[in-house]
Image (cartoon, rainbow over all chains, first blue to last red; front, top):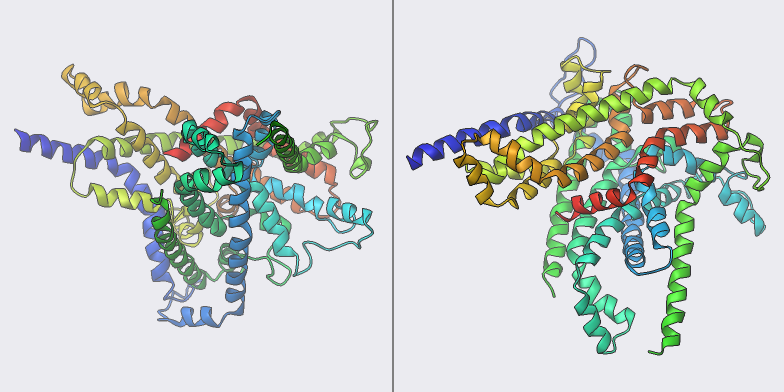
Length: 294
Length: 273
C-alpha cells in the first residue's frame, strides 16, 4: 500500500514538473550545451554546412584584440558599478529606513529608475551627455570648463555608461537592504546605544555584519547584471568609439547579428558562461566565511 | 552624546538624503520638463514656459506606437499567464511530492538564475529559426516562460502551507490538482501579486532579445519601437524623443506611482525568499 502511494507520488511529481522542464531545457540548458558544441564548428553559410574546426575558434578568440578589449571593459564596468551601487544602496536604505522627514519622496526617487526601461532611460541620459548643449557641459560651463564629448571619446565613454548603470541599479538593490534592515531586531541597536556606541560603530559592528547575507545575494545579482545589462549601450554609444564601451554580451550580439558569425559568437558565449560560473562559485566561497560570522 | 549633536547629525543626514533623492529624480524630471514644453525651452528653464502636449502628439503620429503598445501588452500577458501555469505546477511538485531526481531537477532550476536566457541569444535564435517562429510574439516570450526564479519563489511559499490543510482537503476527496487549486494557490496570492509585478515590469522593459527576434512593426514591443524611433537621428527633436520615452515608460510609471507601497513590498517579498 505504502509502495503504491510512493509510485503514485513519483508519477504525479514528474508529470507536474514536465511542462516547466521542457521549456527550461529547450531554452536554457540545451542552448548552453549547444553553444559549447557550436563553438567547435565554423559558421554555416548558405548551402555550406558548418565544418568541424576543433579549437580554431578558441585560438581566434585568444588572438582577438577586441575580445580582450571588451573583457577588460567588462572588468572595469564591474569594478565601477558593483561596489558603488551596493554602497549607495546601503546608504539609501539606511536613510529611507530612518524616520527622516520626506522619506516617502526619497524612497520614490531612489526606486523610480528601477521601473523605467533601460532603453528609455538611455534616451534621457543621452541628452545629458550631449557635448556643449547637455546638462553636464552646461554645469561645467558655469565654471568655465570646456565642452566634453562624453560619449564620443574613448576615455569617458565607458565611465558615462557606468554612471547610468549605477543610477539605475542602486535603487533596486536598496529594496533588498531595506527588507533586511527591517528584519534586524530593534533591541540590538538599542542595547548598543545604551552602551554608548555611536552611529558609526553601530553600523560597522552590528548592522553591516547582519546585512552580510543580503550583500551576498545582491552582489551575485550585481555580477550577473554586469554581464547582462547592455541595453543602454545601444542608445548611448553603440559600443564605440572603437569598442571603448562595448561589453562582452554586446560583442556577442555584434558578432552574431551584425557580422553573422554564429560559430565564433558561440565561442564567445562559452567564455561568458564559464566566467559567470567561476565568479558565482568564487563569490560563494569568498562570502561563505563571512556570512556565518556573527 | 548631547542632544545638540544628535540634531546636528540628523539635519546633516536629512540634507544629504534630500540631495541624493533630488539628484536621482533629476533625469526623469528633466524628461518631463522637455516633453511638456515647446522645443525652444529644452535647455531654458523659466516658470513662464508655455505648456504643450504637442510633443506627445508628434511622437504618437511619427511611429506606430499604438501597435507597439498592443504588442507589449500581448507579450507581457502571454509571458505572465504561461509563467503562472508552468511555475505553479513545478513549484507544487518540488514542495509536496517525493520523486527520484527531485534535487537534481531543483538544482537545474536554480541554475537558470545564473545562466539566464538573456545571454543565450545565439543558440535561442537558431532554435526560433528552426521552429519557424522568428518575428512572432511567442518567439519573444518562449525563453522566459519557465522561470527558475518563479518556480523557486512559489516553492518557498508552498512550503509554508501547513500539511494539515493539505491532508484535510485530501480526506474530503480532493485530487492532487484539486488541493493545489483549493488550498495552495489561494494561500499564495500575495506571492503571485509580487511575482506578477516583478515579471511584468521586467518584460515590459526587456530589450535585447526582442530586438534580435523581431523585425517588423507587427511584433515589435515598445522598447524596440522606441529605439527604432529615436535612432532616426535626422530631424527628430529632443522634446519629441523625450515625449516618446515617457510614453513608453508611462503605464509602468503611473502604475508604480499609484501602487508604490505594493510595488516596493512586492520587490522586497520577492527578494527575501
